[in-house]
Amino acid sequence: MSLPLPQYLAMPHEATETFGTLRRDDAARGNFWVIDGDPQVAVMAKRIFPGSQGRGAGVAKFSANRRTFADLVWFLHRWPLKIESRSEFDAAYRETVEYVQQRQAANASPVCMKPDVVFKGVLRPFQEEGLSWSLTNRRTLIADEMGLGKTVQGIAFLATDQSWPALVVAPPHLILHWKNKLSEFLETTEDSAGPLFADENGLKVCLISCTPRVMKAPLPKAHIYVIHYLLLKSWREHLKELNIQRIVFDEIQELRCGFR
Image (cartoon, rainbow, N blue to C red; front, side):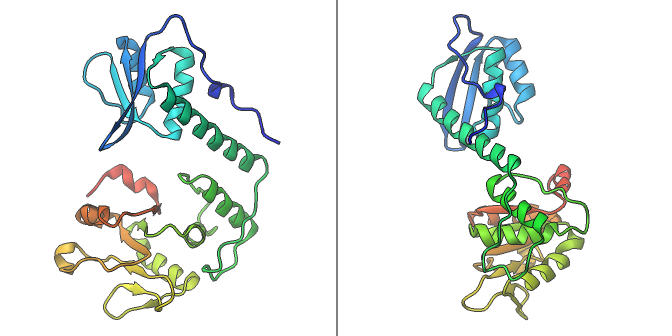
């Protein structure tokens, strides 16, 4: 049984009076929605949509994704705009509705999910719910209290999702914790050269513990890379080349400090 959509996600009706235009801008640097209209509308859009940009008093440009699109639909109910990119808007609307319905179903009837056989441990029932939640909501926070196994849930997610390569970013004092937990719940062994590797048929995990200048070699191929926040700045260009598919941030509030 499908649950009713939230009122803010109702499809906006065509309005006879509008405050400007809305169009899709697909560029090499990403996909964006662009509002071009009354200055006060653009100002409000820049307050609502994070990272908004746009030159001129009446222009607001922001990333196009499911989360911002839900807010965009709500925005159109308050400040109607002429939609110039109708086909792109309708496609984004269908995708967002499907996403919201999946989240509603997960909230209404939490599902316990067993991790993949790659994962060696056994999850508790609330951790199995957390695994199911993480697989349904690919950008999410796990905010369980300390000691309830958030690290284990993160490893179970990576082992079940299997979108490689993955990156784990943690504070310096938790790198050893991640190393031990990965060894405990995945088939890995420590290599004397430094990086952490699995056997020939298993997952490979690379522990990044120094700067590129000190390492003096490219990163080895691996399924999971582990790095701490203080090394992100020096490795960021190298990490971009790896085409990382999943990222797990431990103590994500560290991102507020930016790259060191």
